[in-house]
Length: 437
Image 1 (spheres, rainbow, N blue to C red):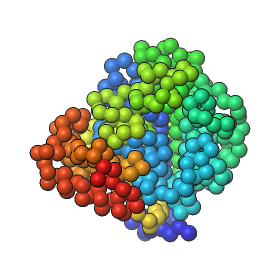
Image 2: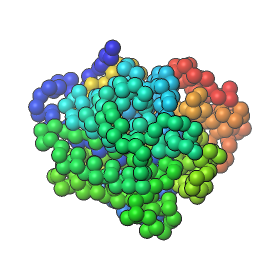
Image 3: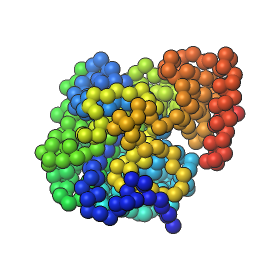
């Protein structure tokens, strides 16, 4: 049974109609495996992303936003506000996996639905599907149209006979699946949801794209149109989609009442395993982590640090760019606070960013972040980051060396011991081991 605490900001006004008018609509735009260096506003020299860039310029662009280094941990942080080791899935969540979100978790959708929101999801779930109770429509979403897990869970990339198909609600409604028009179809679904959104209830729309996860797919409308090959075509179609969804908010007249969050779930799949290097996938079909070291599946910054931005008219000053440390669990806490939603009384790993986003404070409330890959592999505390996965401490100063090129462990033994101790504390708390110690 779930138990809850009330967000302080609503203790006096919960249930009053005046509060409902203050609740922002929430739009989450979530790409899959887009690298830190892929959008043009993060430095890509050839891919054009005018709508993503515009979104960034109309809000705050974060240059030190971190999350899980692959799909499931990142989505867990977004939907529950918790590091993945705290959540007992009891099995895998890909094809043939029998695990899923337990009843004890209070998802973002459940919290906002409880606060009076109309809640909708489009796209990739990846948090359990074998039992219907694990599906989005039984985890707080009124509707869902999308895939239960990643688009590569088919032969020859994954040895499974489980059909990959589109779901609507609890039922698979389309199989076999043609993936080329998927971004177009998701976009049309999002626009329709916005057009039909009720006037008397705030809206939560979570659009979790399939792309640019391998295998890459793009519609004929965008194929061959970018200056950066197939991968560029895919990213520019995603950018077009962002533009279409934002335009739908404008047409509906609710753009100024909508908090928009855009991010990738993790970095690019540069070091793709051999199973993915077949059937049309090429090494150059992965994105760019920009100047960052590492990529998807690693705890160097190229895996967990992703492009991220928020737009909230009247709350976030346009044109801000911040290097402050922010983590995916913070989005959960912030959206619950913005919506005046109840939060559970079990431990959360996020912080309410509202004072930071509004400019009330100049610094993010986050001072540390833990990098899990099953076990705990690294921690960042303030300006320092320690990785232990190699068996030897790797200490990086994230202000002067965000690229993780220079290991300063030998010259900073006190910092190493301080961060090791913090890792051991957190590992004990969540019930895992520290890798390399």
